[in-house]
Length: 309
Image 1 (cartoon, rainbow, N blue to C red):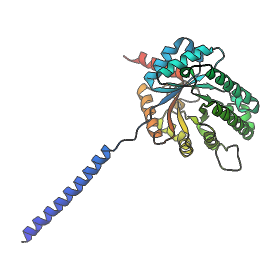
Image 2 (cartoon, one colour):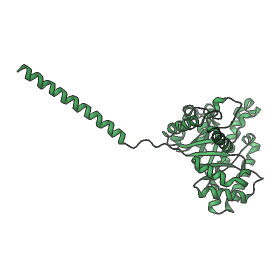
Image 3 (cartoon, rainbow, N blue to C red):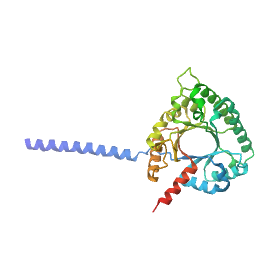
Image 4 (cartoon, one colour):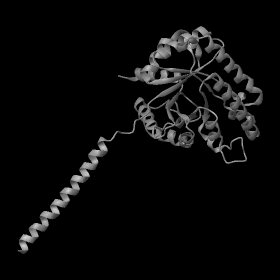
């Protein structure tokens, strides 16, 4: 009897172990079958030398398609004719690529610089009104970086006040035209007090609240660091229902190799870009990676091709 009871006890224990193991296996299978978190791999790039579209439109569009570029921030230059912009924008749109007008100078942040931004917006309105739907710019981005000028060190609070006042005016004009308005900003803007110093709002939060999207210049040679430098802005944009591009640098710079993928291998660049995109995709506000800049990107790809055996 004792032996029988012992065998029965072992059989019951074995059944419990089998049941627990089966349950764990089922849970694992269910987790594997659940839809995985989709990675947003959209990319944007800055195209600063607009003269390239005069002779390289097909190459630019082809490169953009191959690299997954969905948005091009194209600088507006007087040397480029409206018809040349129309030809390029239409070619990009045909491949599903959105083109946003781009310009800006550090001194545009000053009160006296407001009119320069308005001149761009005035040109943009006239251009779009005279263009067919497929030739129209679909947004506008301002890249205004007053912190590289001496006045930022001496009068930061006043510069922030003037800069923010300009942004409000530009945003309202872009809104009147029905154009999304974005701004390129440094990652450390979240450490700068906003213009309303009576509250605790950072300037990055203010900027997100008063634009449709921002591109955070989170330049590092690590996808995780790029994300970490943009995380606060992504969280702020999540709460405000706005969009954030995470900036990625490919060009040569004398500010430090850790800021760029210029000297990194193709595999390192791809791995880190994917890492940043995966981390960013946990936020509803993540618009994708914004790569600085088109010419540096092409040069890097060309160099990589030449290095292949």
